[in-house]
Length: 292
Image (tube, rainbow, N blue to C red; front, top):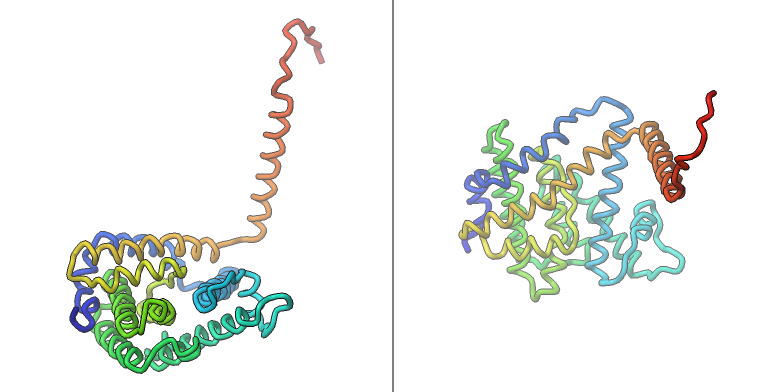
């Protein structure tokens, strides 16, 4: 497969049905911006915090191979460097994952591949030198392609983000010593994908460890086969849509309205339960009517 084959195919990718669908699927979320309501801004901050917790938990699952819980990830995100009763290697993996996550945040502003390479180091040197060099080349090619896109080419931006993700997945896989190393080496590519999408104006996507492996398997097969190219963007759309819906709903979440709806649901359930309890009792047809 040629160098940066996916990025070279980005123009073809943007014409695929899944890319067109992705543009439509993301519109409800992106149309909320710029956020002006203080509640919505606060909600978006909370979403971002939750996103980091979820992502770093996935990283720790891969790095340790152990059962990393959501509370584990939350405690470490909030600053814990040890958790009573929990293995220290899980805490250490979460600390490394958060350091790597924080390291890449500035990439969305400056496009410096050094942030991505540093994140791989912070995760335990999951990249060797040839991998780091190859990723730098992909990042450079993606930046050049992004600069050439028209401002209103949303499909082109989505396709380029997907293509750059596929190319870095391919590079880290090809330079890894074995499959186990490739699985770990894929972790920083998720950070790159989301920060590059941020540069492109595309909403971020939460990717689980299993989903990352599925994407990696498709990416390494390359875009030459039209069916495989479509499979990658199809899978990415499948992952993206529920996350964009969640992000949209999280931003618009209103605690007062949520409390009201919860109360209404409780009342509805209570009435249904009461009706079910007395459903076996039939009206007596011989009962005299009483005028009030």
